[in-house]
Length: 388
Image (cartoon, rainbow, N blue to C red):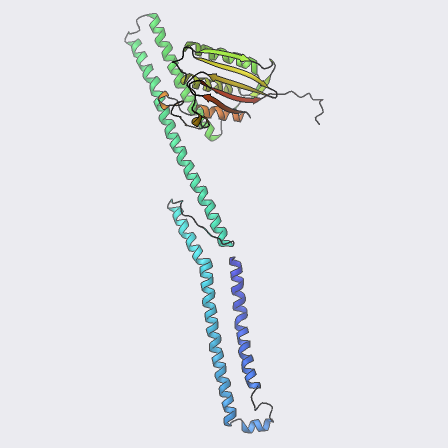
């Protein structure tokens, strides 16, 4: 019952009950006097006989009856007050005390204390609001702890991955300083290695910076119209040189119209391609006679689909649905021994979704993995065209 209803019931009981009981008492006394055998006699007779024993006895009885009724009214009012007090205490103060206890548990960091109530009044609403607050706080704390764990893992991964190229750079520089590289060819080789390791460090730092931008929604985008054929032609030339140095064959096919346009950020789209290709290189199966990566541009009416496929180790089916989660590593396809921050594919997914596209993966173990992502085409609508 609502607290307002309880107050109204209590108010009307206090307002109506005493006058009602008093009226009943006077009615009973009046009824007793009306039935007196001496009522209605001439006044002179009553005056002359008022001190007689019979009349005196009636007055004594009426007086005692009034006292008994008065005491009975006091007793009834006391019992009613006691019942009302207990009713309000059980309906208001007990639930509030439980709510106070629950809030103390929240203050102490215990978010498991549950308040259940079937009450539909104000107390029920308070309990319901408490449960909403408790669940939201618990979810917020859990998310905060998960983010802290992820950040610690990210720092650990980045630190581990930075240590490797730094150690290599120091080793090769010391080799040059100590004269180990005693020929121009060796010096050139050492310098190239140092340059590649520095690029790896730069990539890791950029990845960390971009990850910070994801969490704060401050990713810098510069959208513009891009000719998909021209863009990927230049992109493939750059990627191809890197793959050639790693003895990985690149196959490229473009099946879209030469004038096909999309709206995208060139730098971020390049990041998508590099992250996916870099992931394929990392988990390529060197035991195969020929390692290769296929990049295909496909036409799908009002959209363009890009596929990047490798013939690497593949991803187990149980892990395939989670590879775009931050820091997720499967036992086979994303083993921590291979390094990496663990956020590359989550960054790819974020960029593509911010472009209005979507991405998914298909894979078979020991056969390879294919990443599919889709962008909508840019369609020119003539100004004089009527749109129905």
